[in-house]
Image (cartoon, rainbow, N blue to C red):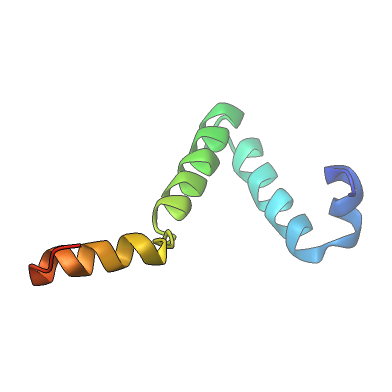
Length: 71
């Protein structure tokens, strides 16, 4: 696995992201702490929106319960 600095030189998308963030810091739009907090929140929000697979046994038990069937 490449370090962030190595990745910066070989991955154009990563380089663009780093450069954009650097400009935000350089222009005093956001502090490094604010950017870290924003990135963490974005990652949390993304994770919260990902569906979690329900085991088939649980899905069947829920369906039985909804339909009023006894297991």
